[in-house]
Length: 302
Length: 325
Image 1 (spheres, chains in turn cyan, yellow):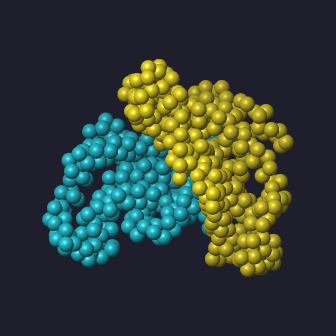
Image 2: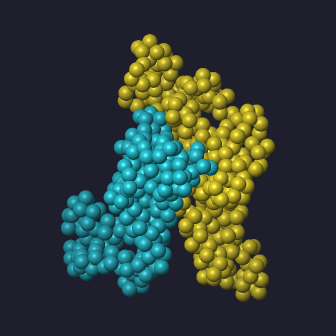
Image 3: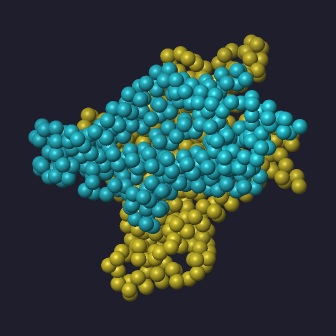
């Protein structure tokens, strides 16, 4: 009886349609939203500035070229910073670190969070409770406070920053992954996979995971948006990239006291970080609207 | 066994869970700051420290005792109001933080008093006027604002209203010791506005989402069919049920304010616990870092707990389902 059921289910669900079409539909659906296009346009322009900027920078980001706080009228370009370095050059060099660090932290949080969420949803029982209560405990630290506690102990270090932000991203992702997976593990094709003796790891990775990519992709864009804010915020507080490196958050920290005389070294990175977070959240919102559409459509088709 | 049933039972279980969470949080903070592999005294004093000063600091921090004893001393002190001695200022931590706590609490309180009702009203009106120009404008505005980091909002306000465009409001808070925060109304405007702008979008979006669902539900339809005015249907019937998820969000956001004040207080040089935490981390003042981390996490846990309990008490559907158990 169970063998017949298993065979029927595996025949019924051809792998390719399950795994490829939702992806495509998700992206197409997101692209149809006006906000996704605006977000992507903003995002690609800022990525361009951050990645290609260094090739267009007129000076070295650490070279002293003018008297401190020279205004654009005195020096040209966007003026000079508190040590007399070219603001435009430092701005063009300063985007890479924010992007790299927040991407790494988000990636770490997504991997750990998805793994924990999947295991919790699949195993249920005590392990589920223990894992999710542990996630709740991690959630009781605001991200920035958790990072500050670690920075106080170890001192400012970039690996630490990625670790701290990655760890605080984990519980948020785990909740989403578990929530989405709980419903998937109940479905017949998982029973079928169990019945034919697929190993647990394979069930989680090739049967459950492909079915929760929608919410995970949305969560990833949301987390990236938040993590850009946290990483830039920690730099702004002085616990990120250390001088004399160029970094958007650090630029704000260094030049805040000269805001009345020379606003550009603060205004440029503030605008870039602001637009970057807005862009990622617009794309995220487009994706999440698309996922909501797919779910509704999928149910009616079945 | 009646204690475990119904609404009182839920509250008791929720309180116990909160206490357990707080305990684990305190262990994590302690482990991260004091019992971490390596020498806390050396990491505080740096490489150039003499053996004598290292030994003295270890003695002062109680690092020579077993970890469990150290933890019990710390948490015991915390519960009785003895937060240890600041290494940088060399005065009791409680003395150092007294005024700062008052400043932060005041800032968070006015920010909450403005942002929670504002978010609820914006969300409810957006749901009522769903798919109108108002709704679309609010949706895009809140989406954009929700994404912005607090320091971006704060510094933009400073550039706009205090330094570059207009010079209307002070961008930095200069206070005298012993003077309450309410004596600086002008200085409070920009920090409060920053926190409000950081929190309102979330509250409004969640409120809108839950209201949209409720306005389509059977009992709202029923109220409409009874011939009640749309205004009465919205505020008397729909809003009370829509409040439940919003309470969660409001409390989460207040808790978020506890983290947000770290950055906002630094932007405006506002002398609260957020700025104190940043300063303590810079000077590696561990007793202050420990005390503030536990305080902020404690606030976070307490607010979440209150949100859960408030949700049960205000939402008619959940209340009846629990009482029936």
